[in-house]
Length: 135
Image (cartoon, rainbow, N blue to C red; front, side, top):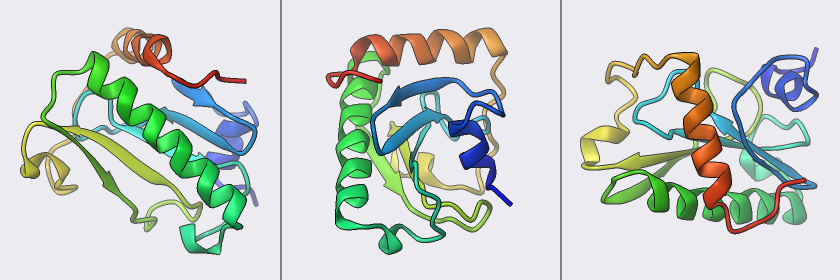
C-alpha cells in the first residue's frame, strides 16, 4: 500500500505544494512546528533516507537547500533547522523548519493551527521565492 506521501505526490491526497523536481517533492507540513515548516520527500518510496540511491539522495538535499533559501527570504527566522525522523510515515522525508530558537525544533511542542487560506498563501510565497524551477 502506498504511503500517504506517495499518495500526495500522485495527487490523490491534497497538499500545499511548495516545489517539485524530477526526483523530489516539497509540501507544507499540515501540523507545522513553525510557519513555513516544509517536508521534502523523494518521489521513490523508501522507509529510510539512507536507502535512497545517490541520485535521489542528492535530489532531495538539492530541494531541501532551495526550500531553506526560500524560507529565509519570506519568513522571519534566525536559522533553518532540519530533522529526519520517519517514525510516523514510512517514507523518507526531511523536515525543513524555520527557527527563531532551538526550542522551535522540538516535536513535543504544540503544533500551529493554520487556516487553509494561510497555508495556501504561505505555499505561494515560498514558491515565488524558490531559486529552482518546479516541474
